[in-house]
Image (tube, rainbow, N blue to C red; front, side, top):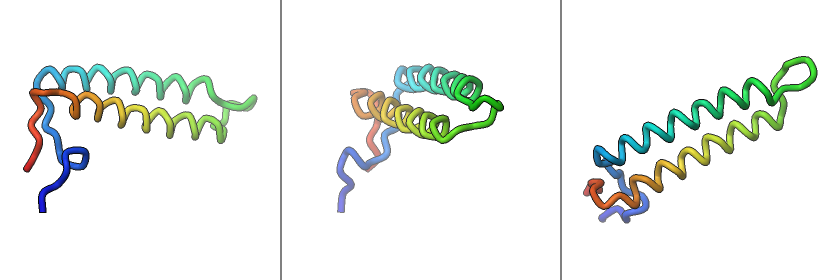
Length: 78
């Protein structure tokens, strides 16, 4: 049974890989910033920080998928 495109592995093109790398760099910097500034008065992590980190990871996942899914030069695994 074939795997539908949204669930298949997409090998990014060289351009797609460069864009993914840029995204990962920026999402990594955002995570460092969240860990630094989203703390309580004692400098400890908070529930809100945890949610912000989770949403940052989720946003990174969707952004990377947007790159490979819409890259006409990406290779979709059979």
